[in-house]
Length: 435
Ligand code: PA5
Image (cartoon, rainbow, N blue to C red; front, side):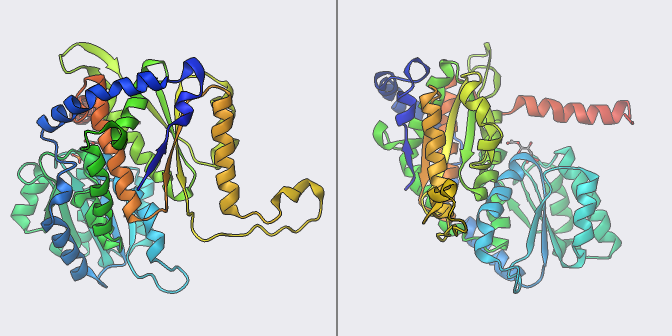
């Protein structure tokens, strides 16, 4: 299971927490769990629906060998979990040198025409499956992407029922209407699961299964962490401990969370986390309707790369951050660094591996920050695989739900996003803006 080392939030004097104030938080655990339960959110119960992964796996088996490319049309919560899953896990199943066993996955997550054109330059639409993902069924970016790709496939006389799959709300939205009219295969996003919490629904699971990721193991990891999320024992509830650290430190002015995985394969996890935290907790009003303008600003960093980019700021700049390291115990096979010089200046590399070097650099970074009184905590996973990814997603989803309670805001809505969606539509209709 995932472990969290909180030592360095207690080791930084007035910039951190005392054990006593942290432990005092445990009195809220039971009532926060009850409040979360009352909201009826499905992100932690959807993982019990055995029918959904079975349906997805059946569909994925039936597509085997038909497609060389899969394009996910969608944005935000409809795209970021999939991007993370593909980046973290896909390497386990591919061999570029021999033959690609699974289709190549592209996730748009944008409407940049250059990007879309470049994807179209390298895919064969006759061998492409487009998965259109929009919970609301009305997001302008996603509908525009769909219309664009649909026109192209229609132009090639391709059967939309074979080249498109929709993932959307069970009842409402334009996509649902089109699916009903045209008989396009559609998977549901349960009504009580919001976009950024939907990685364990068809939104994340369908593309994952199509590229060969073991979705059952992913769900097993999620269930293991859900056990902790629902645990009323403070010492056994990692999501609550994490949220408590984030909240109490934010109250002490550490209003920025830097997520810094020490693994290239987890940088997209940091992107997923960034949206989850920003959109869930950044709110104008609290649950009583008072204006509070709260939030924690997420920043992404990558170990060791960003030690040579942001570390100076982190150590000596404003002391307004909590650092969340993600450390991987077994980062692939051990790779020895060959020592090709007898010069004393590089003798420290004797017998070293890249695996050891990256871990030592993480330890050095954490210690330097602690020395400079910068609170930091470390999340350790054994390996980057489905089981640990499932745990990681659920750890942060659970922590975010608790953060909503700490800040007394609705972690599951996004009125600010809705406003810009509506303004986009209004501008397009009224002024026909052009460069
Ligand atoms: O988390 C959210 O709710 C948002 O980021 C949505 O995922 C994003 O706006 C896309 O919405 P939809 O899935 O309705 O197209």
